[in-house]
Image (cartoon, rainbow, N blue to C red; front, top):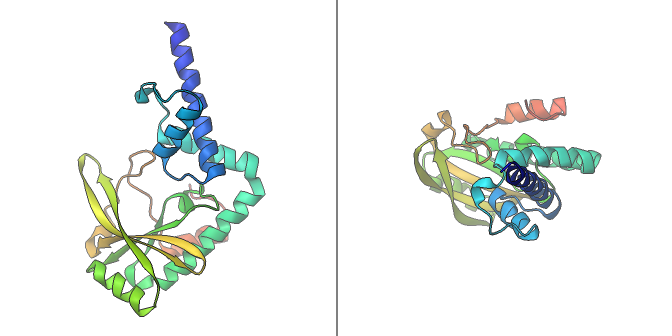
Amino acid sequence: MMAKLQQQSRLRRLLAVESARIMADEGVSDFRAAKEKAARRLGASGDAQQGWPSNAEIEAELQSRLQLFHGEAHNAELRQLREQAAQSMHWLAAFQPRLIGPVLSGTATRHAAITLHLFADTPESVIFFLMDQQVAYEEAWQRLHYGDAPARDYPSLKLNYAGADLRLVLFELDEDRRSPASPVDGRPLRRATLAQLQKLLEAGSPPP
């Protein structure tokens, strides 16, 4: 029994390390996709998924890997993404933009898109703004969770602005007070205003 537990623990650790490597080196941004790819490579795709590492375990490995193997290059790429995020948030200031995800947490790679939450009276307000700016966009949906409540689908837009790939998730005006769950640990997702992001850039370090 002890040997089996040790084997499961070792496999969990290997899956976490390989998933993090895939996300860091191959540009895979989805935790589940990275885990499934890692499991296939390690010959563990048929194993019970409840024994696989959590998203939080993988993110911890990813943070370590980026600093250990990518170091200054990662820091430069992250700063560029954050500067592009600040530029985009200034452009979208009318919609109270909030930065979320890997660009905020510090685990973004050069492959990452910048994800912003926008708040408007209607999604059409954002769309009309983009049309006036003559910016091409692609419509999609983003499924988000709030604790134990049923998941909700939100309109989202994919576009490129000033050389950066943006993912805009559109919320109603009064939804800035409650944040959806993080895909990493299930806690309320951290959101940063433009002012908070600018302080982060001035400090030159990831948020606490």
